[in-house]
Amino acid sequence: MATETLRRSGIKELLVATNLDREVLVKGWVRTRRGNKYVQFIALNDGSTIHNLQVVASAELFPEENLKDVATGASVAVRGTLVASQGKGQTVEIQALEITVLGKADPEEYPLQKKGHSLEFLREIAHLRPRTNTFGAVLRVRHALAFAVHEYFNKNGFYYVHTPIITGSDAEGAGQMFRVTTLAPEHPPRTADGSVDFSEDFFGKPTNLTVSGQLEGEIAAMALGKIYTFGPTFRAENSNTARHLAEFWMIEPEMAFYELEDNMDLAEDFLKSLVRYALAHCADDLQFLNDQYDKELLVRLNSVVETEFQRLTYTEAVEILKTAKQKFEFPVGWGTDLQSEHERYLVEKHFKKPVILTDYPKEVKSFYMKLNEDGRTVRAMDVLFPGIGEIIGGSQREEDYTKLITRMAEMHVPAEDLWWYLDLRKFGTAPHSGFGLGFERLVLFVTGMANIRDVIPFPRYPKNAAF
Ligand code: ATP
Ligand code: MN
Image 1 (spheres, rainbow, N blue to C red):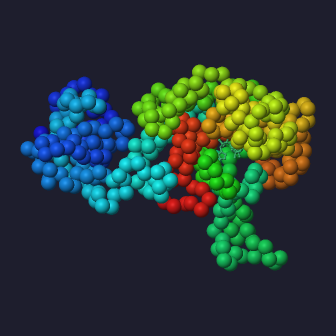
Image 2 (tube, helix red, strand yellow; image 1 turned 180 degrees about the horizontal axis):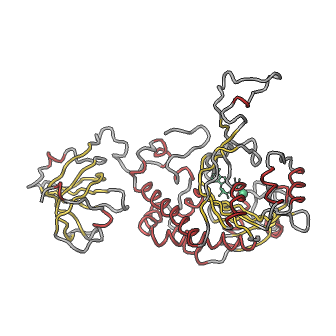
Image 3 (tube, rainbow, N blue to C red; image 1 turned 180 degrees about the vertical axis):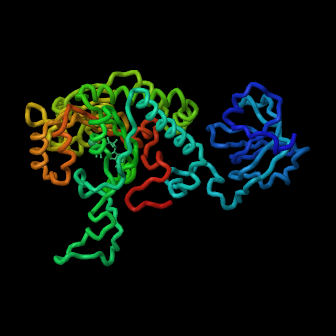
């Protein structure tokens, strides 16, 4: 049979095929070629799975000098017979009949010629790192989790809403937003008093990249009931940490008629279902990451799925931290925000399971969180995960017009910019709640990678926007 008439098979399906001794066509990238003067073994990967397909090229058909270009990194098409493997480590292999090099990769130049590059080095070749086992695994897990997010919400009656990426309200997180403008930085138009004249800007006013879709999400929740957003968010905060990106994806469900308890129940069920999905659908990739990077990974993932999250108030957590034997870099006291070291102590040392902290002091949280009767705390909830710290931040929202406008004034949030947000409290207001899950923090947790820059294809962080 000629190559043209054969349909190409994916390596993932061939590796589990049961109908053998037939001719197949595969295309992929050479991971390695080794062998002796009688036979050459080519490990071929096409990205469909972490596993390679072994191609056996006998010296009779393929003298070694003819295989020079079949080198690590090259793309090839192989026509051959799918047979049961005689060797260890794979159940099937291909006895090659025809090998065509589609694209060469000069071994002298190809950066992935050698194995064992550091993750730091791989960040500098973000265009090639998806071809490594590690990033292949991470990207497939990332895909599976994104799919699971949509599947979960769709199954549970949530509607997917698209909130704007360019926003005209800088109410939340002013000072850490990226500006969006078409004005020339050297010579912006100026008003009589010398300040920049934004009326001449593209939108006729200052605009920014969004830090969260929540406020607009609330609009949709107050009409559709249960909604979620899943989109890119941008924060110009100068946090050079292993858990912060300047551009990251956030999942934000928002639900009318949900109180804080309902919100916590949803967050817990949602997270468990996502981890369960990954365990069920990414077994090979997770096994690889477990063996390669983090021997506790699978144990940890399974334990999160099986354990009930510990729920307690901020005030109770502060009491625990105050009596902890461990020395903290930052002191703990009622009224200050918890640092990552405190969060991780609670999760990893004290409770040894995920924790949901609620009812934080109003001063450390945003203006829109519902005030408790005590007048000092708000109905906030942070979900804290082992190895990560905060993975979710959420709250019940203030639905009372008078209380909301009072909080806005206290926190210097301009009411005139958020007139539409206040309107939601004037017309048919209702208790409602929601939260934000940082998608990369979730991928970080599920893959067991140590740095958030290694779970997104093109990480943006201070002084880095290459590619
Ligand atoms: P942190 O205290 O960890 O900086 P935050 O309290 O500023 O986070 P929120 O505004 O509550 O974050 O955002 C909701 C979620 O988005 C967080 O729980 C986290 O999972 C994620 N997140 C926030 N900032 C970042 C970032 N810079 N990079 C990646 N994920 C982030
Ligand atoms: Mn938060």
